[in-house]
Length: 308
Ligand SMILES: [Mg+2]
Image 1 (cartoon, rainbow, N blue to C red):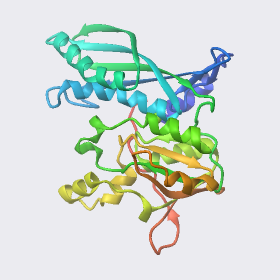
Image 2 (cartoon, rainbow, N blue to C red; image 1 turned 60 degrees about the vertical axis):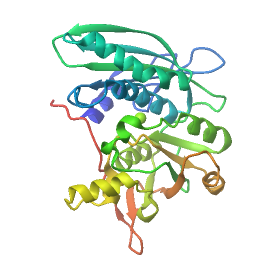
Image 3 (cartoon, rainbow, N blue to C red; image 1 turned 135 degrees about the horizontal axis):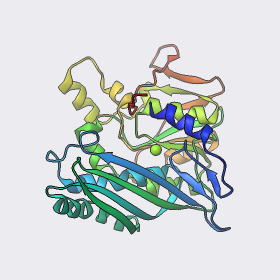
Image 4 (cartoon, rainbow, N blue to C red; image 1 turned 90 degrees about the vertical axis):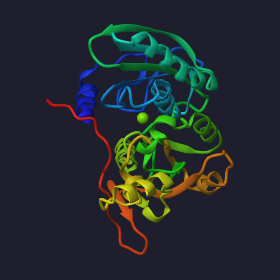
């Protein structure tokens, strides 16, 4: 399990004077000067796991590889600066594939003023693997972290959730501008991007903050794709289940000071902002369905599997 490995790593790694925040958040934070701090994140996408080469336009793969990193920078409320890109390319058709990957990611890089600062490209007998490391800088407000949510804070989410497998997992907009604007204007106390599922990522944020969280399920913004997926599959999984448990929505989950929450919900950012619950002192995740009593919320979502 990836989370077990990260827990081991957090114990194992020695402290470093310049490393303010190491593994365990959406990105690392390095103290490089007295102005901004450097925020660093890396992601690895592989053919057969995250996508299927031959079934999707490689430009969408390239765009996604950068976008997932930008989403992690957004989760830290960091301004993107640069990226370095490592490619392991199949020997057959590798060069054409590399060009297409870049053609897909360059417009997104330009949109967010990200310099492609370098990288490495190898050919091998295995499938395509693409790993991007992105660098960002904090603003005067400092990095947003998973830790910092307090009992009474309002749980807010951007956009709509669920059913990303129908397309959004490639074409989502990383919430960089929204994160920077909200972090600048309001008392946002903690944040995470939803990469593995609302319930799972909320659990991570709550654990790091040493608080619990209650989700009002009737307030969760369920996407049209979630409704479509539930209808198509017809396996008893509801649209709400998809919104609670599907990964790769790459929306932001935020803990907001109660006095700022309603002002924030009314802010016109060009993206929907919804209050879906609150943080509580009692540890654990809870769901409150309309007219029902509170009960535990299962931490559904996607976890990368690893054999010991
Ligand atoms: Mg993340």
